[in-house]
Image (cartoon, rainbow, N blue to C red; front, side, top):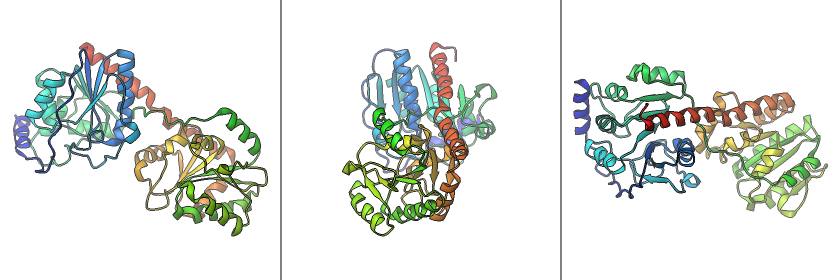
Length: 415
């Protein structure tokens, strides 16, 4: 009874007057279709992995909804553009998610007729969940976190959250803290499954192995660190840090990838003239010979090469207001220990996962950076960080496999 009352009050709460209407949906393909929903941009990558496995291994069509995929849809505060993550390929469709009203939820389910529905994160859509329950559509919540109503729909609605969560068939929490919060909010004990965070697409960047081997021979026995995607505001920071580290290890090589290659000539001149360092530039076909102290990696498309050659990588931008420029998981995926500042920028989710696994070193200044680099000269310390970071990039595969098996059971009617 309380759920019905809460759902009625929830339905009476009007959406923001400027909320755009959803565009007409594309035609539904023939055959079995699975609906996946990623309410925030950071949830799109793991749902894409699940979608592509369902398409490739089970031959079903997949509909993926989310406001990050369709910017006209009502947005979540955690959304960010997905750009290269925009899904493409046979069997994968995208559409704006329906507004959480009974009428729009009915129209959505009538059109798409999914065999199963999988939502990610903590967003709970009571009207849609109720409509799915009425027609016997199995629903799962994966990468599940503390539950909340969609943005703009919050309020006090008696029994609404508890009643909606009780109607979910399967829930895979990200961790035990999330599991406790979900149980308290109304998820049935029988619906809870072993969880964890799902797999993200591979972050491994391509390289030419012959080039890596040749450069590795040139750098053999030298300590090396990489300053990746350094903005102009951090040039002085990495210069000061390298100056300090050279006092501890005079053969240390710093590889610098500027965030704008056009600044490379000025950076090279500054380091050579002011610091007196021997500087070489990749774009000038120069090599990191034994007497080179700074190697400016200003050529295009070679970041994967530098991550593999440098045991330690500082993520540029993370000490300044702009935040971390590059994806730290790309460095983690190939075994480079990650050092970063307090500003994660668009990569907050990745930094958070790595930090929770004690797989990064946090610094707050150029002095901290120099001190940390000095500590990481010990190969075992850098290796421990790199191993922990690598495990973060691979740990989600088992969780995704469990989610895939769950979806298969739901489709087969055993869920």
